[in-house]
Length: 409
Image (cartoon, rainbow, N blue to C red; front, side, top):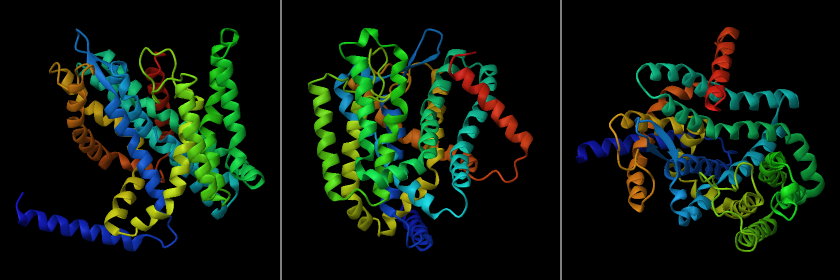
């Protein structure tokens, strides 16, 4: 690329960064936005790197994971599983927003839930229309089911996040009464369920008991964030979280033999993430403590416009990235499946070479996501001109797609 092209491009980037810097309110907590962006970008990175495909004899795609062949890759999931930080900063931001609200608590909650729900309705409604069109164009039904599963896979988070957000007023009361220790009963609840599931009485425990962990498991880091936002967790508490979480994490792996992977592995008898096990909370505690400790240093770094601008861009597209990143990978894999085995894309993730090849595909997925986001980010904006009939149609399409994705149709 010639200097005559590079120089204007760099100048445009500097002007954009400068404009974002000028438009940023002085009270904006840049470190919290950066932590949110970091946790958010870990989601597509993890799904793109630890999720692969295989082709059957009919040319249809099936989900696969390199973790099935390479258990040594499990530590990568410790880094890429950053939902603990996402819930932490979610709780922190929610409590500040809750205190600044101008209306009732109910109106505040409806606004927060609408911001979460619009992008979900958008992606599922679009896929409900696209799936039959793709089938008509010759895409195998098995591939469409695989794709639908991937699209729905990250959306469970939205439902859980909506549930914990609804509990914000109660989290505030708990934080004011118990401080950082308000999250301790949640940890104890998950520990008890895990003991019943995996302890000496496991054979007598019904399988549905694991579902009890869903709410306290993800509320744990959110409650830490609320306590942090209330000023009830300082550096001493952060060090305790970091050291205690790390020690518990190591003990669960070494002494109690929890699965090492933080994400589900096809064919594995146990999983840490669905529903969350005590190992997830241990990692969340360690990550939360580290996040609180680096917060001030991170804020100083983000005083630089060049570093702050990309954080703003990611946060403005947060729900779009969450809802559409799997679609970006499918946009590459589905057409490629018609051509046969494409290394790193439609070949089985069963070799170290595949990992290198998949890394080469990551920029392609990112570029496709940017392209998709250009048209789908509108779903994040308020639907001021959307009629009741259109909203109802979107809801019905979304419900139909969910039924298809969950294998109920």
